[in-house]
Image 1 (cartoon, rainbow, N blue to C red):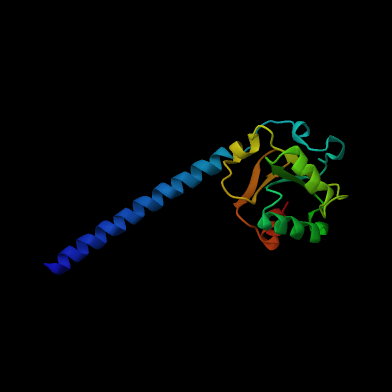
Image 2: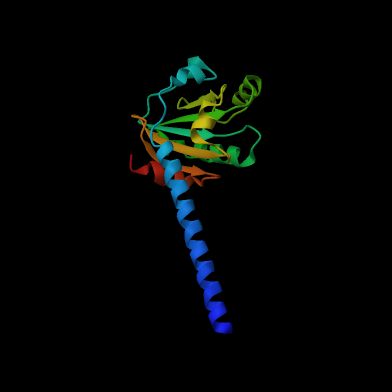
Length: 168
């Protein structure tokens, strides 16, 4: 009798796990479907410094960040240190921080003078809402036609970013 109860409990536990796993996979698939194509937006309208706006690469990499986030700053530093591997990439550093904070950050940044970096001031949280960002840093890589290549929420080691972009 005890064996029967244990088997029933294990069966119910396994069934519950499978249902939860299926639901989570459905949520991920639905999320990925919602970000598969960038919204039509003029990025220049959101650029912090319109004179320094750059859009000549073949890949658009949106890095959702905060100027006080250590992981964000580490990720940006890794990109700058490996910039020769990203010549075809437009980096858009997206933040909803105030314009004053972002200008100060830009003046103190390592990427100052690198033409393929543009700070995007997410003034109406268009990007945060589109990407449904809950974690910073987050990286979203798109082809020039706006099609999603890959994404990552949380810190992304440089070798993984190179792998995402490598074949394009």
